[in-house]
Length: 361
Image 1 (cartoon, rainbow, N blue to C red):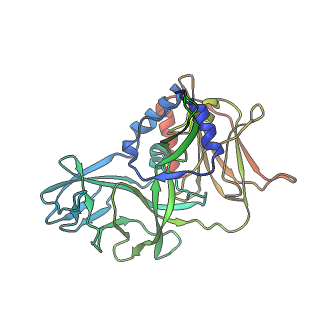
Image 2: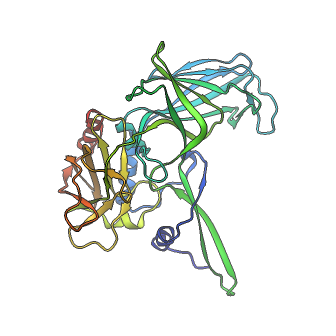
Image 3: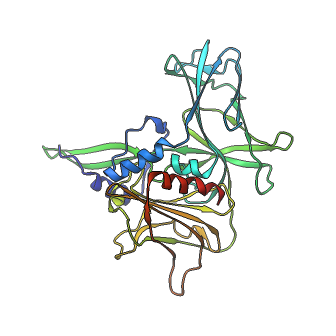
């Protein structure tokens, strides 16, 4: 049977408007099928991404776990069960991955926009799993408490509650064709979400601010999925579509790399917010010097101030530009605004320095 090329698959993904999501650990995904430059960039970012912290707790007594960033996980007693529903006793290993700043969002590829492009302000992204003897365990379904999480954070807008979001890290797609005896065949595959993560609001689930402790508090009622306590930015006024042009050093393999990290990438951080927008939609059939990305349609507020970070890996060399901008209104007769980048060579340490400096923007 003839195997579809990744470019063909990418076209199928771009053309098909129906994806189904799969809730899986991004730690379980196969390596991204990118160019050598894409793999080089992915390896650099991944080696400095948010690390997993590991704890042990007695399933019978529970306990309170505190991460390096000060987030507390209150584990109730007798909350763990096996995949078959049997109570778990003895020591359980808890693994926690926590993202609280923009640089970690870039390095771990976990931006803060909803599945339909709305902008989120993050108070923490978390991935939690539990194992005993290298076998996953689950939370008891009849538990009303779940794992209680307290994040040192205060809503910027004075709100007492912010919504909770669930994040998918994979997309599932189906390719249809015919085999060697002309019989119809469907092949279903999964790849890492090219937007990094898809955030969807969890119905009737909120993180509540406790002013006496200075923490956002929420209940974790399931494991092995990304969760996020985020507030919708809710910017008033008109919005525009931003076309972001790489005038040089855009890696054209990006348009054929719809899984994992891409060899060219673009991020935008609004000023003073714990928010990261990833531009992942590749401009199709661009004129010379107009290669790059565009935002969701009419999603970026006009007048919004912030900082872009444009990144490329081309022929084994890193290139980047960090640029402060104010999002302009579309010119007369246009339905978009534009930003142009002139990327310069950087080494790995220089690129990591630019990424880390995004926290203070």
